[in-house]
Length: 124
Image: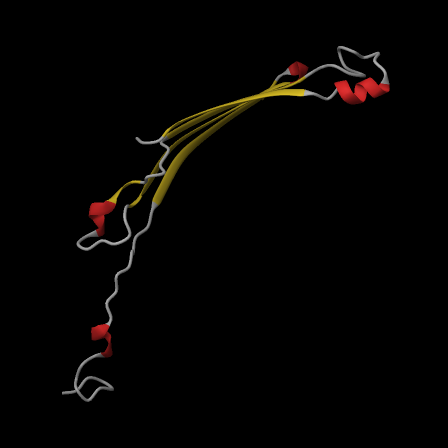
């Protein structure tokens, strides 16, 4: 009995070896955002992310890919960010310096003060 297309009975696929990384990754997260705008030009923004990033380490699995499954190297389990913005009330039509000249208003008004604080925990 012969294989289709070959007189020696061997399949053409016998000499092909496949070494592939047939894997995937999985990412789940809970994200919370709080933003508050106060009077006098003050704004506060806070963001928290609790996440889990799972993947397969390495690129080749000689036995079973499940042995290489676990937390990703770039996983950040907890991330917290806090930022603030305050518009300085100086210049024409504002609380302070409302009577300054127009050239001085171009230079001295419209300023803001900002701050950002970020914290992250890499593994869980």
